[in-house]
Length: 403
Image 1 (cartoon, rainbow, N blue to C red):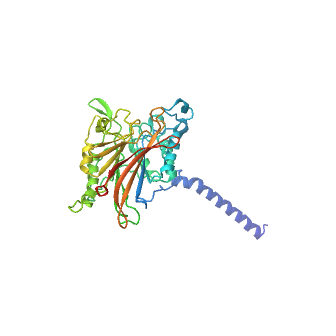
Image 2: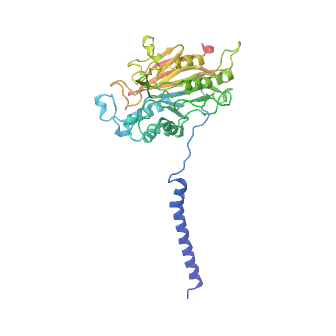
Image 3: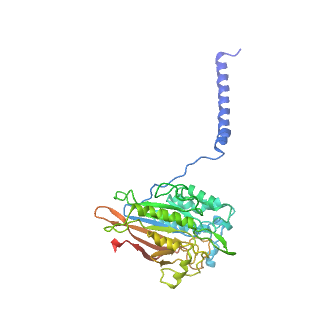
């Protein structure tokens, strides 16, 4: 007969065996059934709201036309023969990191054709590779779509949805359907495109405007391709988008009304979209800062974007992409229209003409005791050369009080 001690020993071993089996089942089966074979992780958000620095500045890096595809396996286009053998998407990533290290931007705006859809078989993978560096830097960022992003395995809506869910992204697929910023009621039921949204930038910490919007950033989907009267053309910004934009702008008109003693103090705004509007073509005959090297590839439809921006009164500059060999700024009825210049190495360019990125800096005015509203907006570009050469620095706007 077994002793009592041996029986207890066998019982404990048996219970231990049963527990091990149950633990294994829980680990290998139940968790997978409950979590769908994926590890649950929460999106990492930047510190919100976005605001000016303590030194009264807010710096934006515009990245236009990355045209990212498959990383090291994607060859460069339009580079010197001496550069071709060792040039890939990784050159775009390296340029991005050099720009961030040199400029330390507070915010990064990707203005379309972020990936080159026709060169990749997995749009999601290309997006993660393209935006991976900005996520690593933990810098707040936003993106809109160009005319090539959707040419792979995801629709425009799916692309913007994924972009909005990425770490540190403040992008939105579209504004809330039933929300009006001015009244709190229904604003617009349907809006064309995907990636129409606004971002508010608050005043410097410790200032009397620390809890107030002092700069607005508007993002618009300019579409991709369309057929108009039997002819193929590029997309354009539709009336539903302009209606939404007018409503957003009106909110600030209501919050900052003009008086005889104080002229209009509505915060200035910057607008970002991919495809230029038809009026940009006329800048060829005017004084510009930068280079006008290729035809403006825009829609045959003029939807009245310029007239709307002028009527709104607060938009001081527009930043575009699409035409990689153009990097100029030109003024249309008091509003500057600026190209980013081609950033990515898998997008077309000109051999010997360096890829480039645009920097935008808004500066607050200094009051007697604290920072005030935006006083000045400046811009310049940097080239992807040995010295990251800084070119074409200019003032885009100054408040009347500072002049």
